[in-house]
Length: 241
Image (spheres, helix red, strand yellow):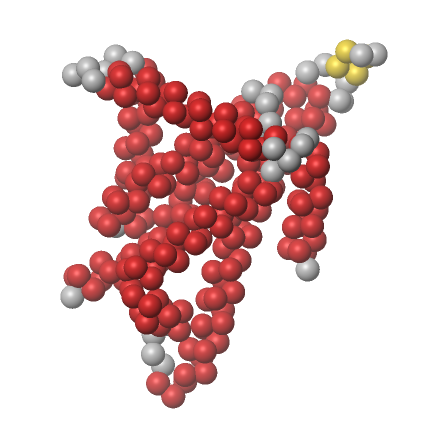
């Protein structure tokens, strides 16, 4: 019941972010920033030894994502680098918009839920493509237990519910952390007010806001890798045998 109460509160809070297209505008702005930075970084990468700080920074981010995909998923994880890199950069830049005083799209539940649905549905697609329809279904039953087949049936139910609630866990984790950070900054901003003048105490939270923004983007990306590994690992085990 607590989960559904939280979902209701999240949906009700949507009105606090202005008209319905406001999150879409900031998401588009996020994409524009990433595209612009990417173009600049690619130009700098044409040099034999890149001198551009942005190029070197994005190169390090790419290698970080590459190492994470390979470590969590395995060698097959390399083909998912574009997906995970995109998820990480979009969430990170969107979070940083909130740090600089704009609206972070990730503080809107409909945005985080949409991203979670996209990831979970893609994971199911990868599972079906990797294991086949029958192998995908058998995956939810767990290892054969003979006459204890009732346990396999229970495992199937638990796994299906778990897959459905991945949407909720992914979206709520990101939404709650980002909206809480935004609310905390707003509360600090109002602690000391003299007439129309307010002491900007929320500035002391900027380092914390930056840390939360980075960590939440990383958590979403890592969980995406973990969900993919649950299916891709079966393919690697089959090749090993």
